[in-house]
Length: 297
Image (cartoon, rainbow, N blue to C red; front, side, top):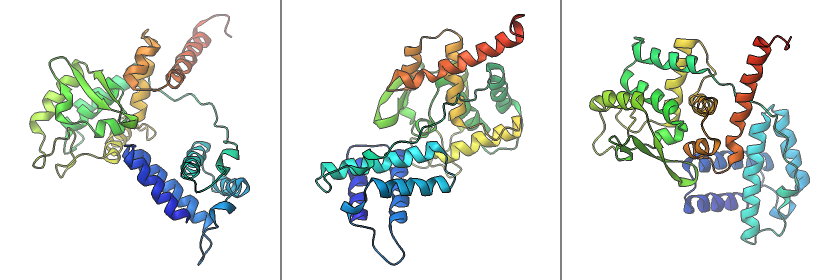
């Protein structure tokens, strides 16, 4: 019964146009939840027996696996959404998952490269000969991730018709299929002008960024490209596409950009999500104070 409800829930997500990334994560998390509740050679318990105590037991198992708090919170959110769906469909009368307290996530400030570090990295992507098969494509990826603050899934979804090269705007499809218009600068435009003439697509392929077969480059492929250059040029394996999105927002803020304008550029639904970058800027400011002010020491 639980499996059938999970399948119905995932089908509902697809029906309401949830992103492929969201559906994929929910499916993975709920399959793990189902596996935990299913004894060997037996069926999972009936729906009315899956109570808050059993869900807390499952969370305890995640803790024993040493999952991060962020991953645990995401998995609990998936289960809560499933139970909300089942309650709406009349399968259960009480959403037991709502009775389980969400683990508190540590308040961390994202590590962000400085403007000099970021620009040096991208300049080296353009100038270093690392014997990569598609250097022009790779440079354009870096210029758009940093120059437009794109999520890696948004980069993956870009099509040729999304670009207005005359006005320098690109149409971006973000979370929940929401679209926004984002400007791109001269460096990104130059990188695209160099890459697009050598792009070799399969027949009918409209994706901007392609893999070695001429098909759309996946998010995983883009992450691999960024990681390769990060390790090769900076010896920093922690750098990933979202690091460039963080840098985009933080550097705009440090140069005086309005927080709501940054919210629009990033495609954040809530201003509170964007406000985390003020903490980054404040941390940098305190570091400057500690180094420079005579009364700081």
